[in-house]
Image 1 (cartoon, rainbow, N blue to C red):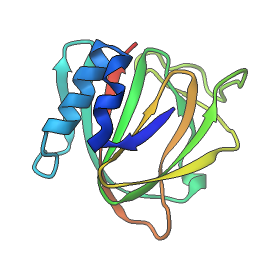
Image 2 (cartoon, rainbow, N blue to C red):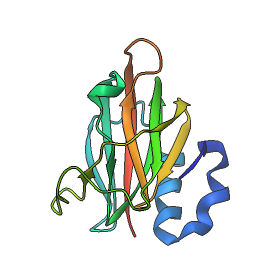
Image 3 (tube, rainbow, N blue to C red):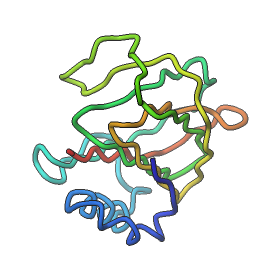
Length: 149
């Protein structure tokens, strides 16, 4: 797991060609004007999911992990808490859903608060819990970059 502001994205471009492309896309796109939806950046390798939602209580947000894709979650507007735990030897509470590249977990999480302009990278070795409210529920606009390993 890595977290920083988009202003510092160049520090992480050495993490691979696809990571570099995804981070550059986040830095050069004005997401204030991009409608919610899924956008292909590199076919079968990198795509962006632009989403707007209201943050929720921790108990309403299920921890998850992926196998094929690394997530870069970038907060465009609002404040969101992200739960994090290392995957290690933890077992999912659901079978792996290959079509959606996700397994769900029931774990004690550590939380990080991200504000507009910040991103967090979750690798397949990370369990993460997105969409958690920091204070009161609030509307958040976020981009989730899916980057193939």
